[in-house]
Image (cartoon, rainbow, N blue to C red):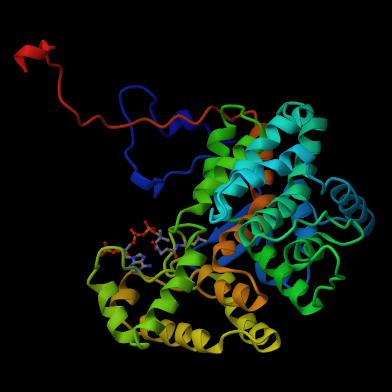
Length: 402
Ligand code: ACO
């Protein structure tokens, strides 16, 4: 209900807001964040009530359709997703074409982009039936694609999905299972991964979600829009931070565990040296997701036998940073990525799969935001303006005169 023409003149005057620090690009009913108070809510429900109580599938339903499902609605949603987990056999061939050492994130985005070529009967953004079909297809196929990307990177055979299993168990089996062997996922592992997916499920207009909306605002289909979002998530300042955190902790350990020296390098702003997993554009208080992950890291790591040495290092690093004026003045706290990598590693995932796990968690949020954007009559194509700082008009010179 906001009349944007009253806020900004669209002719002659533009607002310069590099990084969109103060600019809202849309109205949304999906996710609420209060960065000063450290509050995050999906459709009004606080994250700490959802995490551990609602399953990832329930939360996906909540984000996409606006309400928590009844038992019957959840069952129907689950069954629909299970029916769509298979990938077209020809799409499977794509995985063979990538180099063995390819990072799984671009493999993921390429395969999601390719869904537009295989599932052409669900590309019309203005057909509710087709949007529904592409929604279910994307939710169902992304775990299969992610597991195939993993199997490709380790040179192991790919497993077809087993639709007697729920989404998370199916993904774990396709990732860690072998064709001729039975695989039963540890229920603790399933529970922990499901909860981590819940924590990542949406985060309003972050870089990847804004990308999904911007691409979709040109009426590009859901697969194309989400593929772009996956590429945005790949960057180390966004979803790629979970990989960078673990690499940072390992580097500190290799250097003899000298945390104060590392913190000094961060404060001196040495090129490329940042405290990864710290800081957030919106949270200027503890990230509520990080608080939940930190609580669970201990329990999960002791159950799954993770690397407690790196966890200790992370804790010390957090303690030192939180009592240092540099971080206090800038209101830098751990974000969701600071502790997740340690859990993912304890679960057996290689570091390069961490951001893929983030993408699996974030996909219902991308879908919900894309659908809200498409359904909103106020949506216009995203087309920011600029402030031109190049040369004033000048005359062309023949090449011999230059
Ligand atoms: N380590 C050291 N200094 C930092 C960090 C950090 N992680 N984050 C911010 N700062 C400093 C900046 O250098 C800047 O200092 P200055 O005022 O002296 O120039 C100040 O804090 C403000 O930082 P900005 O970069 O302006 O903050 P912005 O909102 O643009 O960036 C971001 C947010 C990208 C998350 C940033 O904090 C960062 O790079 N963090 C590390 C990467 C990371 O963990 N990303 C994950 C984010 S959460 C997510 O996507 C799930």
